[in-house]
Structure formats: structure tokens, C-alpha cells
Length: 348
Image 1: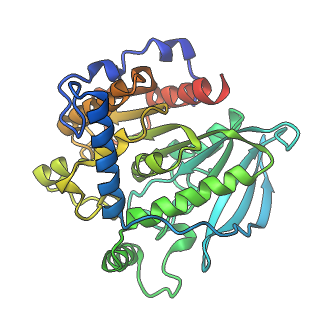
Image 2 (image 1 turned 180 degrees about the vertical axis):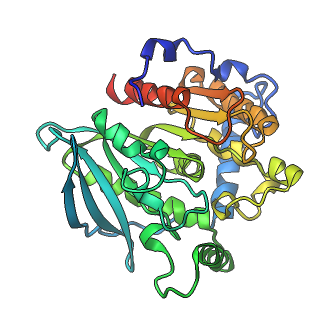
């Protein structure tokens, strides 16, 4: 993965908030500031209720380091920390050589993809498994960022502890377990991601006021799910995932469980969730032929998000790319835009 051409990024033809006219989301360009605020607050309240209500007050992290491995230019720390009293999250922290408590660096939380690869999880972005295309945590560490790669529930070391259910069965079980409790898997993922931010913020090698997050596929879903609830994330990048409920229904996609929030479609769609990130810097990449995010609804979703940024006089803080003749991948252009975005907002 090459260094980004920052000048090219700043001049890119990627869609921005200027394309907001015609937005079909919760907000509209003609809304007054008071109406915009009221609608945003109302939708946010509906979203929280549909997710399952507020999250518990965070307790101590009680972090532990299981082992450390030195690599070429960085080290891997295999760590765990508490999300809830009986729920310890395994993660891999990637620390570049030369980054210390006396010379700290910006931090990035990296949410792994789904891809039906339940045994993989965090080891892919940490560069010790999975597809080299998605060894993005290592690539970011080589650019000087401290990167945290946690396992999502049902993945990696967080699969069925009893060994009774395989990957898809355990994910279905967990989703239904949360639903009957009045919550959903997205609620749990947001809780866990907030704890990831707690952990990376606690590290002395990390500049706590310079935090971002990135994810591909389900990791992108996790990016726009956590964004509205975690103001410590100063900039966010999602790659190849904004499946709207409208598109899922139109094309009959059997999407992964973290995308589904019971009852939300009465009030809005997934781009309305992403729009709540405004006015913080936010970038999205898409492949034009990606069947998991049908492009017709993606284009409308971009307008919805752009309208929210325009309503807060922050149009320049939202950018997006739809790469022609490209599917569900992390292309060189997508990666260059991603790294340039972090360079601009975490290092400038």
C-alpha cells in the first residue's frame, strides 16, 4: 500500500456535501436550523430506543497483556480488557517502533470485516492471518499510528466458549438472545467499540485527542454505528458497506446480523444513522458493483449524509468515493484516500 498523494486527495472528484440536494433522508436541505435540530434529536432518540436503550456505565478496564511479539518496525501486544464484568475482549495492539509515552502518536481503532470468516476476526487487520489486502492495521502502524484491533462478538477468540455452535449458528444465537432481551447485536457491538476507545485512550503511547477509526465491510458498518455515540473519534473512515434497509428489501439480501436494528425502519434508514456523525470528519468508499451495498441506494444515502453536514455548515468534512467497475474490495485508490484522510485530520 503506497503513501497517499495528499494533494490529489484534497482535489479529488469524490462526492462531497455539495451533492446534498435532493436528499431523501430524515433531513432535507430546506429545513430550518430549528427543524433540523428537532428532527435530528427525535431520530437519535428513536435510534437509541430501537438499539435497546442506553449502555451501562463503564466499569474498570482491568487490562492484561498476554504476550508481545516484535515485528519489523512495530510490535504486537496481545491484550484483553473488560467490556462488561464477565466479558473480556481479546484484541491486538500494534505499536510502531519509536512510539512511547514520551513520544506518543495518534490512535486508530480498526474494526475487522465479517466475510463469513468467524475464526479470523482481529488477526486479519493485525497482519497475522486472513487476506493481505486487509492487513490494514499493520499498514497504518507503518505510517506511525498506534492501532487497536479487537475481536467482535462471535469472531476470533469470541466464538462459542462451549464449542457447541459453529460460526453462523453462534452469531444467530447471539443476535436472537439480544433481541429477546430488548436489544440487538448492534447495541452490543457499540458497547464493545466504546470500550475499545476507552482502552486505546488509556494507553500512554496514544494521543487521546487524536483518535480515529476505520473498517471494511462489517467494519464499515461498525464505523457508522459507533460514530454517533463516540465523540472521542475525531475522524472516521468506512470502506464498502452502507446497506440500506430499502436496498436489502428490494434486492432480498441476506445480510449479516449487525446491520439490523429492530423497529428502526419506521423512523429512518442506515444513512440516517451515519448522518448523526456530522459535523466530525467522515469519509466513505464504495465499489460501484458491490452487491452488498446496491449502488442506487448508496447514491441516495450519500445525499442524506451530505445534507446533514450541510445543515451544520460542515460540508467539507464529509467526502465519499464510488469507484467505477469495482466490487467489495479495498482498492489502491480507496486506501490512498483513507490514509490521506487520517493524515489530514489526525496529524495536521
